[in-house]
Length: 220
Ligand code: E4P
Figure 1 (cartoon, rainbow, N blue to C red):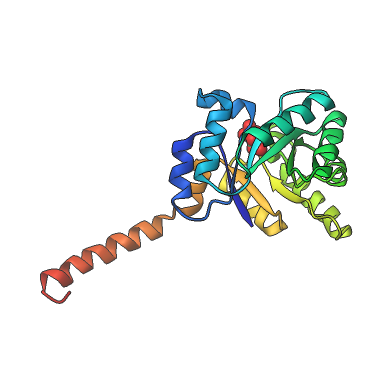
Figure 2 (figure 1 turned 180 degrees about the horizontal axis):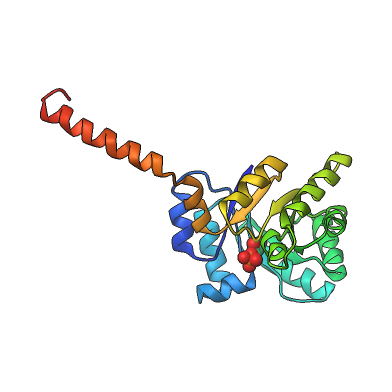
């Protein structure tokens, strides 16, 4: 399973990339706004930290505009940048055009398995169902991941990866793993939570105290 960071904060990206298991980064216009930085400059820097796919989102709403922006981003930004496109009919057409040109895409804002399947048919490299935003409406976002994975099982020729997004807590990630989602994108806080266990910390404390005694006894 691939683990992506969902942020445009380069300090967080450096921190998690140093762990050696970061597979990619997703950004969106809201995360770029939060970074307070120039869009292309920050994406360029992210792409220099992580050599996996870095999603940069188009902001045009018409097909021609999305294609134009996607081509411009591919021309100006590093090779590992992929184009994030909203799941609308116009976005579907742009995904088809870009994927026919061999450009990798991430179709975002997916809230139903029919949207995921149509994006896959358009040649999307990734589809991004938003779990947390569904949970926020009082429904279970994980059902969407289960439904999409079942759809993928029915059509083994689909190569599009299911990128679980809008992840709010570590349990979301564990459930996605159990359902076989290919990728999960999450904030740095969740990466840290996935690695943290009080018994690991307690175990290290105990070993360090005992080792200090071994050293004090001259037995190290
Ligand atoms: C995914 O690519 C999106 O950037 C992200 O996961 C959205 O998450 P949010 O619902 O926490 O904004």
